[in-house]
Length: 172
Image (cartoon, rainbow, N blue to C red; front, side, top):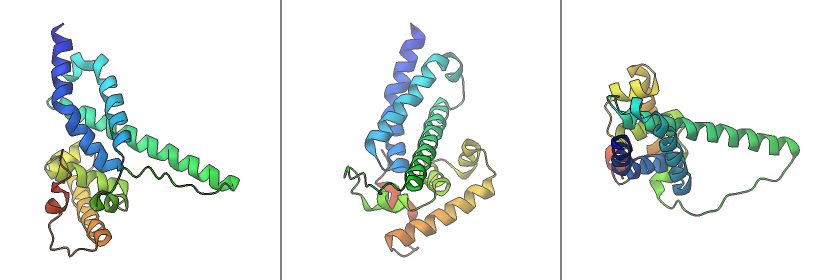
């Protein structure tokens, strides 16, 4: 019973934050909620072990981000198959995403975007971003630099404008 209560408290304390982070990553609120729910559902049967981790939220976030990347890869393979078949391109015009910064983030490659979200939205230091992504710190620094440049270019703002300022309103 205590384990269920602990998980419920963890879920209630972290769900909105994770959905916000996933929204920044995916640009779609529905997808963000679905990915978060799936990640938490995978954590529940493993909660006895995960709750002992130093950062259980990082485990759930990693699962959710991996699910997002898998979903994106499947969508890209599906789109490639449609193009091979000669199908017309279609646009998913759900209109849920009107924020200029979120749109600009879509132009940033996934790995750079992931580093930007973890560093500027989740507020993880570079060392922790590197650990969570399983890459060296210098790789994260490179991704952050390139991601900032691409984000500033997409928004057509001077690079003197701080990335933290641009992404601050995306924090859940």
